[in-house]
Image (cartoon, rainbow, N blue to C red):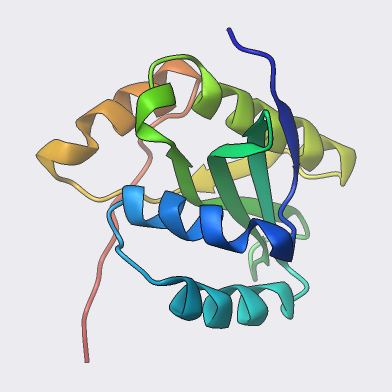
Length: 145
């Protein structure tokens, strides 16, 4: 395991952050990412945490808080998670998930979920989620209109 800091995203991270999002499989420019992050930072139920080693962003996890019609619990959704390619397999993603789990408990939420596509390139991610205790509990239905 490597020593690193997990902290909230800061706008000074933008350039490196854009690279991480590209490694997640969504190529983007710094200018495009700046537009997204300004929007995300303006919404109070979005939170972004980054893993930093020697001032280099090596991972990120993005979450949103949700309230539902079915109960009064606040639910945390992991919306994005990526580790810089050369640091994969070193436990960074697990540390980011653990950070979010502890943070969730600190705000009174005991329910975390995520959505993940069904594809061959997502199999390692699915194994990761299962290894840290996440269960498959449903389907995702999508309609592009």
